[in-house]
Length: 144
Image (cartoon, rainbow, N blue to C red; front, side):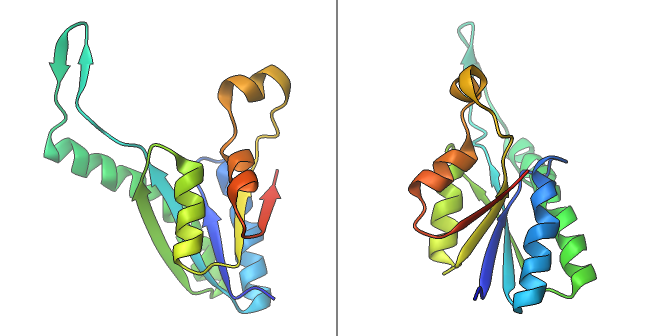
C-alpha cells in the first residue's frame, strides 16, 4: 500500500512520538523512509539599530546541531532494518517544506505528530500539522 513514507520531526520528544509509528508501518509495508527535519533560516538581523551578523561558522554549527534532530529516526530505522534517507532542509515555513519534500521524493504517506491544540492556543501558536493536512494531496498519518 505504501512504498515511500516521509516522517517529519523537529527532534523534540513530542515530535518523535510519531517516529515508531512511521518506522513500524514502513517495516510492515516494506517501504523506504525519508526522515525530514526543517531548519529555520539563520539570517543577520537588526536589534535596537545594531546589525547582528551571523558568521559562516555559526551557520555551519547550527546546521550540524539541527542534523541531530534526525538521530532518533536513524536509530529506530536501523533497529527495524528499514531503509532510511535522512534529509534536512531550510525553510521559514516548515509545513510547506514538508509537503514539497514529500512531493519531490514521490512519498505516498506523511507521518507526523500533532499537539492537538484547540481554540486560542491553536490560533496563537498555529499548527504545522494542520497546514500540512490542509495543503497536502498526499495522505497524512497524524499521531499524538
